[in-house]
Amino acid sequence: MAKKFNFIVKVYYEDTDAGGVVYYANYLKFLERARSEAIYSLGYTNSSIHKKFGVLLIVKSCNIDYKKPARFEDTLEITSEVISFTKTSILMKQVIFKDSEIISKAEIHLVSVDKNGKPSKIPEDLKKKLEN
Image 1: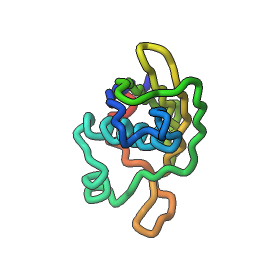
Image 2: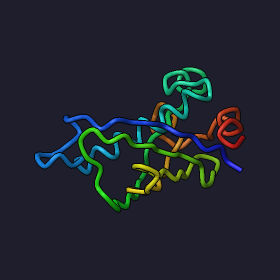
Image 3: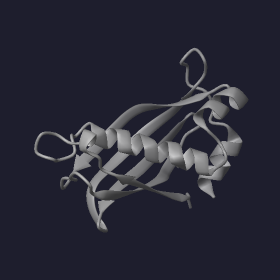
Image 4: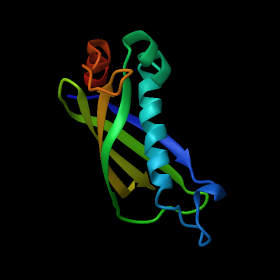
């Protein structure tokens, strides 16, 4: 079973539109922060993965479903977990909660690429840490 990661983010004025509602594209930023924090919690950084293994994890695609809005000064919790792996990619599920209620769900397809942008095997150590 894959490890589940949690991340808390506070909604600031800069994240919202004129009506005080989080601008839709900013949810992608929140999800990116949550994935980065998941990597950090494993003892890596995106830079150290590139330096040590010669790969970058990039977003190939994302599918996001907005259920309810988040607003200025809300505190959101984001859970991130791996759904599946291939040799070169990771499929993640990320869920955004406000007061324990799901307000958004996303599936993010990440690909491990080399310095030339070609798919490359996911480092085994990283895969093991994401799984346990």
